[in-house]
Image (tube, rainbow, N blue to C red; front, side, top):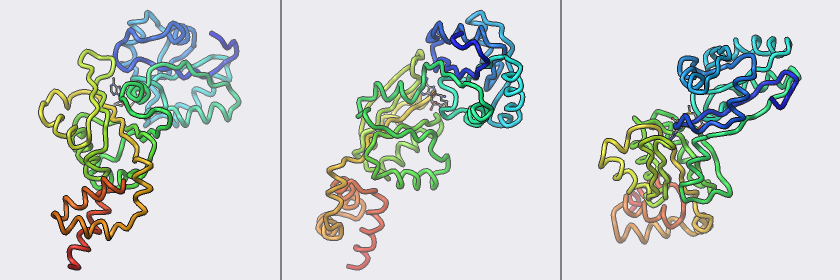
Length: 283
Ligand code: SAM
């Protein structure tokens, strides 16, 4: 261990392939007095694989508050404790934030043993700008709330990273196409580091079609890496929207006109569609 005094170690675990585990992480889990794990039965597979028999205690979103006192007491007694989650980096769409805050407030060191994180792995391979990005975790599961969150994010120029489950992946991508624009590029990363790993970079509408084509493409765990709103288009958003929509409505239907205006201005399709309906009704 690098720290001889009692500390809380935040240890990343693999997101798929159990072989992706550093020596430092293994040594840390071996040397601490206690491992707090999200699901102890699940994590026992990993510790067995590593030949580690450190005692484990559960710490998940429903008992984190109650576990904090126990962990702070162990630290006070001079024991170091490690926190792991089911996969990847604890605290990243996983429990641990309240614990880290409480341990710091109690005056103990918190140290990281970094490793896998699905969001960062996906960003590193998606093929979209990686210099500035926003991590949104899971979008709301209900369609209305998800679409309104996407509308709030429509003008965000940084690359957006989202976690999504297999049963919502297709609907989520469809919503992205409708709210952010059919042409917005999305990197889909499925089953990273696992047997059926797959990643593609497609425009939103094409990606929804790609997902619909084959049931297997909707199985497993997903990260979506979404292209940010183009800065230039956002500036073009200053142009007279009504005039642009007027021209487009003279050529095509409301839906097509709204889609085209959204592409040209970089603004959210649903917002423009609502304005196009108003203009069409006023004619
Ligand atoms: N703490 C984890 C991390 O560092 O990535 C994330 C935990 S969150 C509860 C689980 C979500 O992460 C999954 O629903 C999926 O969106 C994403 N995820 C985890 N492992 C993945 C993998 N191997 N491939 C793709 N996405 C993954």
